[in-house]
Length: 95
Image (cartoon, rainbow, N blue to C red; front, side, top):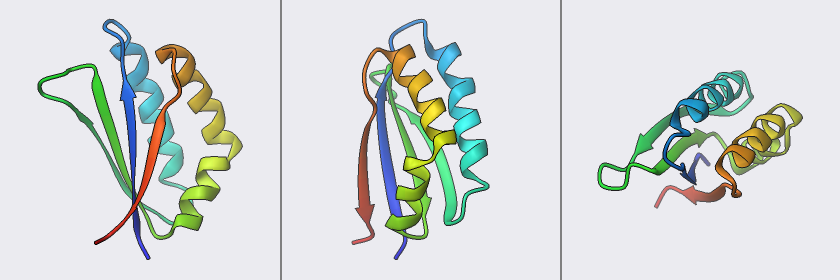
């Protein structure tokens, strides 16, 4: 069953330009992973520091494999270091 992954990040002012290439690199790698369907990055219109990435995967197992991969982990460490906090995730099934 397909799942949506909601990834929330708070980006301190002035760090947006450093974050965006990392998000593009992450998405580029994800697109080659088994089970990846799609992804999009959204920015809150009222709180510009709030970003949400929504990705769709064929199964929770596909997402978990990508989540644990070394390639993803290396980029995620850079993102967390840039933002100064851990990224939060939610895994959602279609209702």
